[in-house]
Length: 351
View (cartoon, one colour):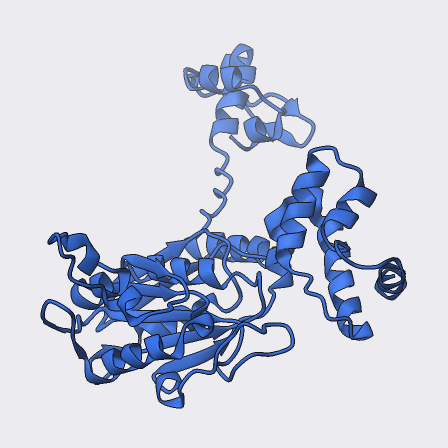
């Protein structure tokens, strides 16, 4: 069989050799050379069958050892090696409570802060989930990050924006008896379990936050129709551009939040994830993404009060793909509203 594997004999010859039969014993004759390196002696009385007997001897050769089967560990090692070359790997995060898998997010592109957010809202103190306050610049992906975190822990997601009245949060009794006026996102998450995504919360009226603080502190709240106990799976992910300390030069419309309310949250900084930003526009938009990021660094370096966000990256990549000239795309996105001298400064600093 070794000769078949080495190409020195055909499988047809090997099969035919299986039919060969030794002739009567007799005087030995000279060796019959069947292969340059193999010599076989055959009985003289059956010299005519010497070739067939030689083929039979080929079948007696030991089989070559089979290649060892690849193991699961080897497959995993090869996959891990390939994944290590990726900038943004497919994400698989499992949240376990008492040994039971309660949530999983597989394969989506996620922000570098994603794992922290999920772990925070999955942690309980005195039976209640910890609430999370995300602070970061405009366009850093906070809103979508909160939605992904809710998906990961398998809870409904109830988004709300800045509140100007506590009734935006808790609802009110309608004179017509319409029950939907009581079914606010906060009420649904608080009573039945879910993630309240409180976007731009630092733009809310402080008086609205006073009611919200009471609700978070006591674990129950007197809504307009009845007192409701907090559900075990109620949790709030608040997103803001500040730490709740009031307006800044970039975010002038933000209010100061009561320190007691802020203490109800675990606070996390969510900045721009540049690797994710490049991945979002794909290979065709990578050059544009790198340019936007260089302009963003130049803005900081030059002390210019303007925001260059990943929204500019996404918008510019789409406009370029639509066939708009790059110079015009720059004017409509990263350099929009800037005077000529400032644009020149940024171009020089970005090189």
